[in-house]
Image (tube, rainbow over all chains, first blue to last red; front, side, top):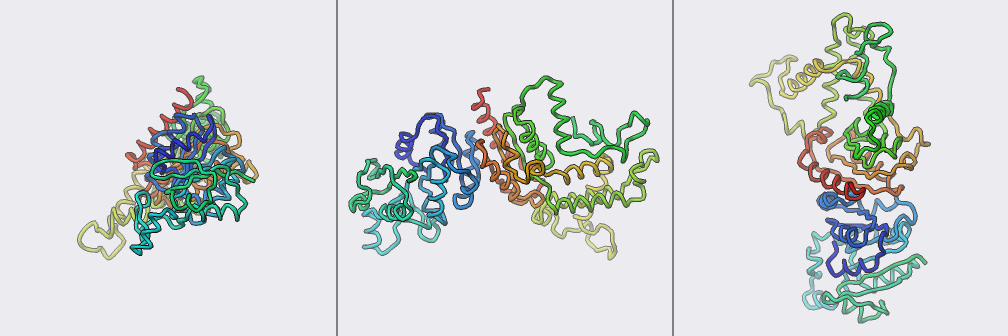
Length: 201
Length: 284
């Protein structure tokens, strides 16, 4: 699910009438917002029955499905934009999901929680426990987030897959800033979230 | 209007053949799901309805919905296939075959000409319905509804309906005989068996929906083993290859295939949301 700040940022990155896929759309708030403000043709995928129910009840087109399994059935370049907001860390095969997103979409917007943020580092360093945060509030044994990473990890993965990062933003204390050098040490240390716009090379 | 080949209005095997003055019986032509849809099309044509807001149906009705979307894409705005499949599975054909054999081996069937004899293949049709009824529920639903509950406190040590589930099935069978025609049962089950939407499209389901332009809401139920969610998921995967708006929801229910008639509350919200979404998008 996407918070208000990311919602505004994502909205600013989308053109009117775009065909948009939101993977892990939750209760459909972002899609609904984009349909009403940008007149997009929206499609969602959501794993939870309740999320799908709430989305469809809003009049959105949402498939009950799974990012790991269901992207393969879409044809190349079906969507102008594919959004993956706070979902990559919950997929079984993040690498494959990224590749599939770039295949079916012309542009991809990906928001990830950054486990390189200094407060999370301190939780491990001083308390010796797995970080529990406001947005990732489940303890290690019940969290659906099985593939957490840092901004640096994510950039390394993109590099290894020859994916080009078109633009990057960081979220610090609910403040969104564009970052020129996404792979800098301080961006990784000081950001709670990274937002990336990926395009095919 | 009820279904083509049925016995409650639209022409079927029990209708009078004007050439002979007798009921058609087995002279009634074999018909398909597409024939049912073609008849519905004639109906809306005669009513000068250009485009239907929605076609909705469960099970065999869902097959008709899929046929509408594939064959008459410009005549519908939205399609809601529920607890259905794009082709009848081997297991489902097998169950139908057992039901038909029960009917056709009943001595009162008379090759379908029982009408004049004022008889009915009661036992055969009743057994067919009992089998079918088992397929409409689920293991969990049976256990929850009946368990091993008895009709009386003692066993008969014979073959009476000792268990409540037996008595329930016998009642389902015998009450069905009073309201349904055995030959209609043969023909309609055959129409479902023959249904394979991919057959006219080189086995590729996504080609069937190539010209479709409606919005889809596909619904399946977790405990439905007659039309399992995996078959709805196949439809979704085929539709993902098109450029259409698709919704798919798998409703949690322990009531088996019958869920589509029973899970009314869950449905209501989803349906009303979907319908208002469609009307918003087509500006009605």
